[in-house]
Amino acid sequence: MGIFERKEGVTASSWIYDTLRQDLVNGRFTAGEKLAISALKERYGVGLSPLREALNRLAAYGLLIQENQRGFRVPRLARDELDDIADMRRELEGMALERAIQRGDAEWESELLAAAHRLKRADEAPEMEEEWERLHMRFHRTLVAPCGSAWLLRFIEQLHDQFDRYRRLAPGEPEVRRVLDAQHGELVELALARDVKGARTLMDDHIQRSYEVALGSFARELDPADRQQAGVGSADLLSRR
Amino acid sequence: MGIFERKEGVTASSWIYDTLRQDLVNGRFTAGEKLAISALKERYGVGLSPLREALNRLAAYGLLIQENQRGFRVPRLARDELDDIADMRRELEGMALERAIQRGDAEWESELLAAAHRLKRADEAPEMEEEWERLHMRFHRTLVAPCGSAWLLRFIEQLHDQFDRYRRLAPGEPEVRRVLDAQHGELVELALARDVKGARTLMDDHIQRSYEVALGSFARELDPADRQQAGVGSADLLSRR
DNA sequence: CTAGACCAAATAATCGATTTTTTATCCAAA
DNA sequence: TTTGGATAAAAAATCGATTATTTGGTCTAG
Image (tube, rainbow over all chains, first blue to last red; front, top):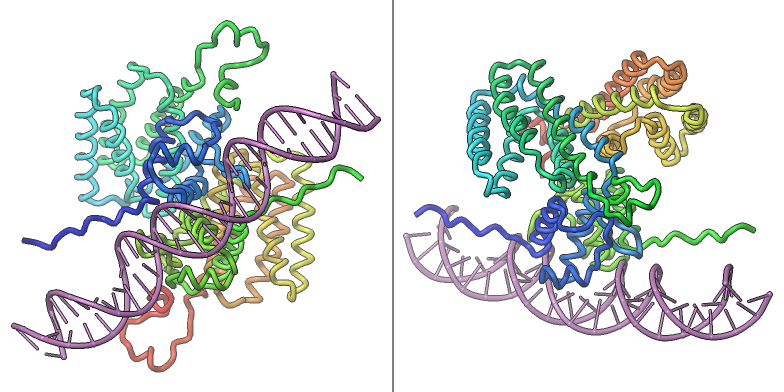
């Protein structure tokens, strides 16, 4: 009846970009690994040109490191960098949240409640991990959406992807997780109550706790052989080539 | 006598990326313009593959807009966006400056003095426009360099490029310019005196004045024909296709 | 032995041609 | 005049092959 929705023109390049982005964020590649382009070509069944275009984009975005004449590498995980990322998340998401609370309208309130509700449902269904991740991202996005700055939102998104590289690798901590889940609801309450100060404080705490979970990505068991090497902390294991 | 410095491996892709980036920031393309890829190929004498890779990177960086199946466009200039960019510059550079002042060491003080001095020399030589731009960028980079956050620096750099698209297009205002030049020296003094508060205030003012200059990019003369079209403000002229 | 020079294999980068999709043009019907 | 549709031209995206550079191994001179 209506207009035929044209199937969105997904180019090979944009498809492989999205796919690789997800796989990178979800830790499907080893940190520090050098990407063998021809292997990727096989693995994903795409041509060289679209693949290289996607890799270039990912490098500009910060999910890959590009070195002239020697291809692309997955960035190492380093505690320093995680500290930086978490710190910036606190600063930027805090700023965005304050602004969003000051500027968000009634429509925002509705969407926020909806997003929080969907997320809560997913909290209780531990089998749908991927779905939860989607909804979680979407909740945080909705929370800060009306901050009024496209650039701020862009930076926050980028930091989220970076942060998740660590968080997704860390072992789950059910008790912290329960607290974090509860905080989502509290954030909504404070936002609806237009409690700028309180919301920001809670957001700080929320990110701090997430950060502590993400730190777990460095807590790898060392096998006896590794233990003997003096001075090799667990963090080094992940950041070494 | 020492080791032979290997000439840095500049690929065609990275060369055309740098070149296009500069040309975009310097306003050598019309805002809103659609880039004809084959024309660029001619103009810069590079092949399709490296060119497309560069365009993809620039799009991820925010200096181009990529639309599936219909190539690349130069982003329009819009007053809203300039407001956003300037606002974020104030927030992020302010933050970075505070941290830099708290963390910068003696070596930083020296480099800062040096950078400011070089810039001052260039202030007085109005013929070397390009050189001044380089030194100006470098001064601001040096100022915030020891802030301790690689991500913050990255975002600031990106915002600078965006901001300069507008500023470079705006007509020069010698009187404001004199004030801005003087502020560079004052920023150094406050930084060396470790006056966090004062430095931040001055930085806010510095960016505010630069913003007001950049606003001039919208102050185009309208010719009589255009004037008759009701409701067409000067800003629209730049943001229209 | 070890540092350096040389070569061969592997990999990255680039080119030229082909395929796919969009955009522009023209014509007929309402 | 418009509107819709077919078609030609233009442009974007992709492919397959070629070229350039790096990497890893081997040999030789010191």
